[in-house]
Amino acid sequence: MHAPRDRTTRARVETSAVCTAILNLLLPHRRAAEPDPGTGTGTGTESATDFPEQLDRIADFVDNAEPVLFTLPAFPCKSPNPAKVLGRLPDEGERLSLAFLDRLCASIERIHPPGARMLICSDGHVFADLIGVPDPHIDAYTDELRAIIARDTLHRLDVFDLRDVLGERDHDDKRAWLHERHAPTVAQLRAQVRTDQDTLRLYRGITRFLFEDAVDFPGTRSALQRDCRTRAYGVIQRSRAWSDLVAEYHPRSVRLSIHPQRRGADKFGIRLLDSPDAWTTPWHSTVLRRPDGRARLVRRAEAERLGVLVHRDGRPSHFREEDA
Image (cartoon, rainbow, N blue to C red):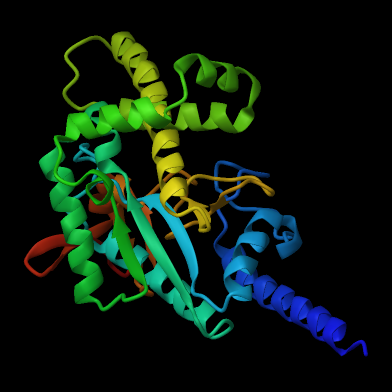
């Protein structure tokens, strides 16, 4: 008499267990906004129940026996600062990060047989004009990402960019369309910077990156600082607009972020590789391999001081630290 209810209850328990197990795979790689935004590490006491938004989204896929879809706005382009990076194209940092994301999806498959897919939402064209990187360089970077995915058979990964939405329209037209349709106003962002610590932290982090990457600015240091503060608001506007567009095209996805995120946020912050700074990414740094084989992200200038350059497929790839 009560069998249908019992089966329903049992199914809910089973779904909950699977979702918890999937989220537990993400937790060791969480990029946290608390307690220490400098390192991006959490307290170590987080549990799956601290992330109800992510559990609900994962459950939607588990209940329907579908692959879990993650969306990650990331991998825009290389920094234009040669003191940070080896060149314009993806290198060992991107290759290791993509391999990590594919392995993460593979580990989910052992818990949830339909598996998982990771959609890399490459956002370089979204703010190319604000960060001083030519659009052709971004096309070359994104095309090489796709080539790495194919070459290394990372079949759980895909790339999504503005070309998938607006085809081959002029890049300035694409940015104008995105901004008009989805971007918050500067006044709204200024109010959030004044009242919200996470937005303030993001604003300061982006301002710092813009200042470091402005290698050819013709004016004074104070003029550059003012310019970077203005452009930082533009980058956040476009980033928010891109995030909304990704959500519009993939509304059910589990949303990830390379930026530190608090517990309970609608996005889950994720670390791609080891680095001393929560804001460091493969596209703002260079890989330095330790003698034991472990890789960490550092500025190119530091990597040159500590290691020797290694080439892969005829291009500079990373640095290798020598035994003392």
